[in-house]
Image (cartoon, rainbow over all chains, first blue to last red; front, side):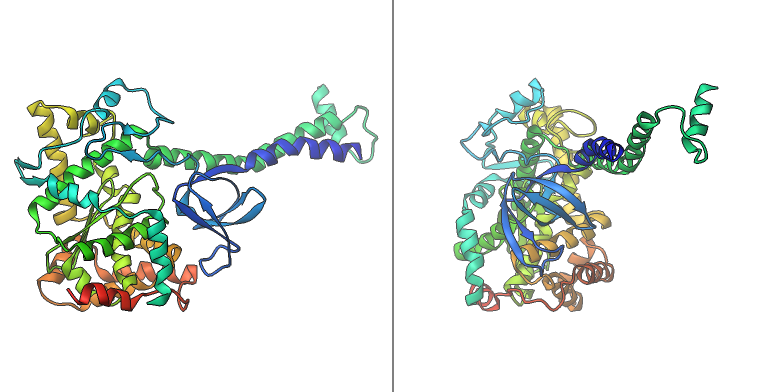
Length: 157
Length: 296
């Protein structure tokens, strides 16, 4: 009996080490009951949620999140937490809201805080660049709530 | 000699062990466990190594990607006529943003524009700049197909196809990396180096096309993205088959920058079969597309 106990104790650390921690990379990720899109949706994980990987298939991870266990698409998980959202639009030279995993590089840091704004029209050697049009493109804002409502409305159409 | 005796005793059933074998048993257990878990550890190592090669990116790299992508987007909009139809642009941005919620790179904000071009095509620049032509919009029969086109371009961005091919990095490592330094410099030489990098990106987008493997990956990711977002995951395959039947210059353009349709369809068929995506009920929102696009 003692031997069995010793065996179990000796194997325990390795069993624990086998589980890998991953993080949700998307804004949201569906936790499914089976490794299939047609399976029942158990929950919706949020960006940067931490999960423990229990099993791996070709396109899915079986994970534990808090008290729930289910399957998440491999595309949406990574061993590293997601990068912080960058803000490099006009008038905002702060470049990053936070610097959670900044790599030491004084050159890059200095460059990153420089202004991004180019003149509206630039003639380059290979053609014209229209930054005014890029500004207009960036000015169209759709909030996540609007996007979700837009998806929900599909059933009416 | 002592060790040999211990081994003999350990495996001897006839004789009672002369020494306590329990420590040896525990050690053996550790060894077996190490071997058993070795493959897992090795897989993890490979995964992290892969991620280092293709996916381990830092904040500076993200800034570099967006700034570089912005330059490429400016060049695209400087060379193409684009739509100013506010309602249609907002509609496309709603579809694209909804897809991006389920895409792997939540650190990016995606932007969508419409090019006044009759060719059936769509393009994307690093950092989240996506373009779809009027010709591509007109060929779509429902909203899921428009979503499929945008999802394919989102996938090129999310999988960093141009970023990886051109080694766009925030710090100097090799090649044309250190883009933030190039963008911040007023020196002619560094601006010329940046111009060359943008030229290469434009060549990939408009002329040479992506690597075939990247195109096929974008198709797979797009189809999964459609399914994640509740759009018909068969929409991309359906659209490609229809585009294949279109004759004239519009088809030539899409064929030049994309691998042959048969190969793409075969890959999609494989994915659809493996994931059981056929025959499921998903949204197509045909009526909503008709209201926004057909009337324009």
